[in-house]
Length: 107
Image (cartoon, rainbow, N blue to C red; front, side):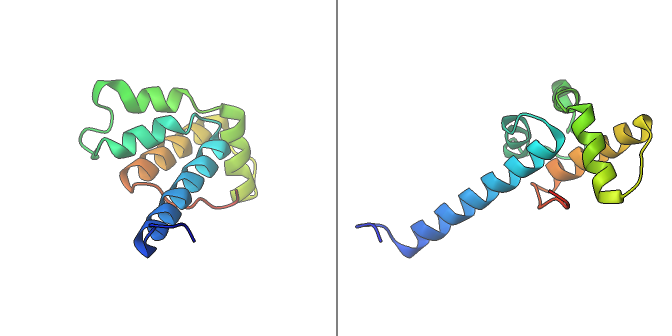
């Protein structure tokens, strides 16, 4: 226990750490810079403006294709064609950003 720290301060710290860990795990699974999805989520994007100024395309371009392919093949248990990996990558990134993040399967 730290002097002057309230229970609420501890809860807020825990929530912040959990969100950072969630974003880090997501980013590592797809091989992208964790600052980019965090920045997009914090900017209040919607489905209508997700690619405003090309930011979503910029985010997609940072994904390491080999890591993304490995991730999708691991969670689905099958080989996936590269063009399907691109579709899955796009859908997962968009869902992740619009929902404000979530825990991913098969870390």
